[in-house]
View (cartoon, rainbow, N blue to C red):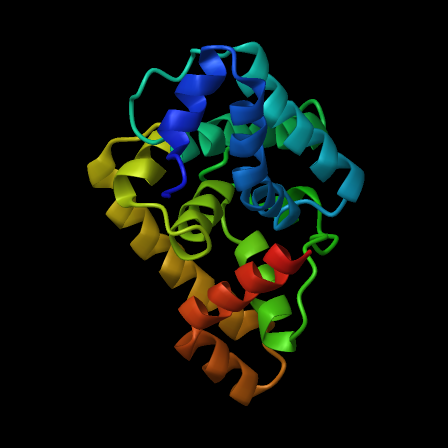
Length: 208
């Protein structure tokens, strides 16, 4: 018997089936946790934002009305919470522009996402040093496998804009890997295998 789709679980949740809601949350808990953990250094803040994301979904049941996918809706809620959190960390007079400001600009401490290899740590450092919206776009594509239409829904931008953002993100990421790598061999292997590194980072976080 096939497992119910996200959309079926959400519809059942809206209709009053709390078990369906729990199943939907369990299905996406790891990916939403990874979304925050790859950017923030404080595990408590990560847990709080994960909880807030699903709390919004529970208290605003029915807000998702079939426009796009359920997972894009969940990441969209997470995206809004992340931006608000990072904005609150900036000093009152400091400007926060997610198209220009990186997570590392706000919090240079390494993220709390656990990875096993130096290449993975290099990739995460490089990701945190590019503008937030570009980091999110490339992570949703490489780590989570979202389509361009889903990424557009998360970021609330036209679908035609996503390809350009991904190109820019990849270019900046390569530049940052070059700048941060301490060994030429590590730099080359990371640039040649960004997609493979992303899969490994996802696999490690799935295990945690």
